[in-house]
Length: 413
Ligand code: GCO
Ligand code: MG
Image 1 (tube, rainbow, N blue to C red):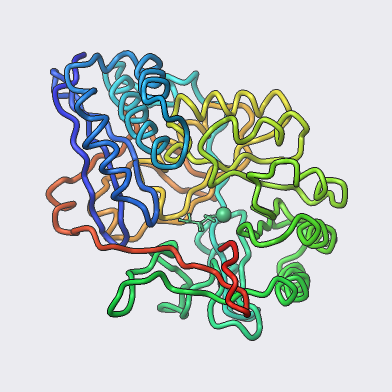
Image 2 (image 1 turned 180 degrees about the horizontal axis):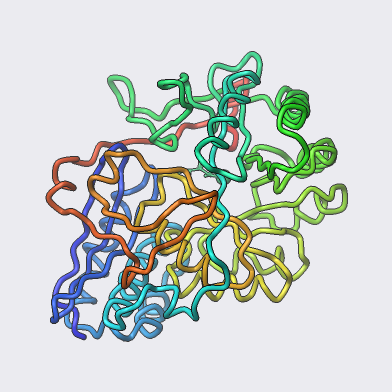
């Protein structure tokens, strides 16, 4: 099963994606997602300049050994760029292995533990009426769980909220990396004030619960913006609304900070979309400081690493909640879905549907029906890359926004 080619495809059908395409001597191809939103070209270079030369002529069947070789052999370990590159190689090799075996990846991982993976979508609105319309729209699309994000009175733009009601929907395709603006390209700047946010959010969930009742699973993303004590206060203030989870309540490189939040609130906590290694979670898991692991296959070292992370999480009763915005490509989404089916400690899957343009390039077979996602029984991941279509959408530099407080201090976005 010798690797005879490995090409990095950068394409921008609606937003930027980086995809690794590995081919064996038998002509079997495997895909891996290497998309790192706002820093895509760093991963392209890591792969093209440093990893691809090592893959050519190697044995595609040796997945664990290749993972260890790329992780330990690089000497410089971990980090989002390195682990996205390792993830792309690992995922492509699993795709190949499953194709050779003639089965969908989830079967190779031990078979299905459930009929489908519960999905949640991104309901949002600049104000509460627009938000309620968005929740309703998501329920009509078949979602059985929704994330709730709104604007804050007095703010022009806020994370997670479309800047305009696009065609009656609330999609924001770039999630939300935006093309660099101005004569000297710079990321967009958003102003933030945590106290205004803390005052406003309970009123939002009061309105959503009043409109949709107590049953609907509601999620919220704090997006790293609060101090631990502010997060503790919000978690407590939101307890009457029985959230499915409060995500990224505080920057969690300081894993011990979650102890303070945990002491004050029973609102379930989800952490980890910016994490890329099991070592980022050891305190969070061993002390049961979180309830859901947010890492994505794409950013955390691939299928091999994610399976190990989720098996460790299972020891502590922590479940999966894999990251799935549009900057996880359909390849990364498919890889997540195979794991979602195969692990016992599944929690929920983020599913922000890709645009039609994106799906011109990535031919997917996964299904979203009755609120559940299924990766399909196509051998491998079940996604193919149309390289010709990919060439029609050249890369365009785009940056995630930068957040500043009213006095200009850079804040967490
Ligand atoms: C989420 C994430 C995203 C990130 C995006 C960054 O919960 O889906 O927070 O919205 O902002 O993935 O590229
Ligand atoms: Mg998030």
